[in-house]
Length: 197
Length: 197
Image 1 (spheres, helix red, strand yellow):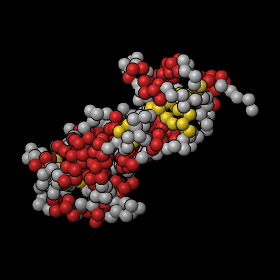
Image 2 (cartoon, rainbow over the protein chains, first blue to last red):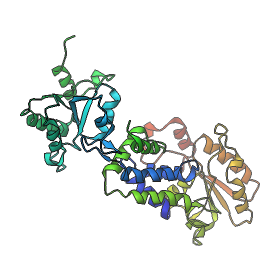
Image 3 (spheres, rainbow over the protein chains, first blue to last red):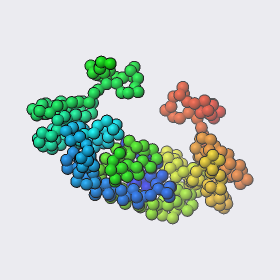
Image 4 (cartoon, helix red, strand yellow):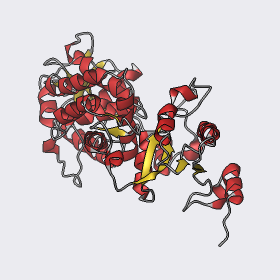
């Protein structure tokens, strides 16, 4: 235990996800003992991220403007929407450079245990985007876990009333992974989704 | 990759020790998406830790005053000084509630590879504290690794010119640990330092 400010800052860092008491202490002492670490820059960015960053009014991705850079980009395929749970997923998919359509961030997944129902997600906004008939395919890219699958199932039922093709990302063995270490469900999915060569 | 501020804050968190790109992203989105997280409190503490926290003029521990709470406490045993590498070590020892003497923080350990010599550590200040003859025992509590041992050896030679007893923390098996998982050096030390029951 430390006196005053040092302990307060350790506690504050400890409130952040993935930072335990030991890490929080290490970070605090690093800041304290490293004159080259720009404390004011971190403080400014913390304020800015709250004041200037918000969610794109169309897709729900993070942006400093009204619409995010992807929604503003006319070169993106406007007939294709990839539905994800979280803005972090947009970044993950963008890194693959495989997808050139638009996104829709739900802001979570259906989870009765966590008390999250369909009304808590940006599903109404998705339906509005699909209303004008531009979009031809919706790719459901929610997480391949219980909540993500439930959300995908819910959405696919909802979307089947529209004349839009609805797809789901493939489940299977991770590339570079070892078959012997794959869990049964993943391995089962890999068989189910096997492709002709 | 994100636009502007979000990526800047991710990069800034990524500069902190023990925070990789994924953690930095998770922390940034937590701050962005958790309205209850008090950004201004963290910012204020970051500034305060730089402006108001410094090192005790006597022992080198962290404090918001000229002297730390341990050096100010007259009830502590003034004849006993525990020498540690870092202010974090003071906190670790305080948690044991086994030690009621004073501390001396060296500010590192002798490491030719890192270019840290005896002159870079607070050794002169230690010698000054020992000059008036109040202190009867110096406990060398540098880390039980190569640099810590070298520092302890250097200090013990230096202190043997004075009429002060110099001791070193015991090395041995960690309590609650498994003998079969102990490394050879630790196990060897445990034999060497065995005690009569």
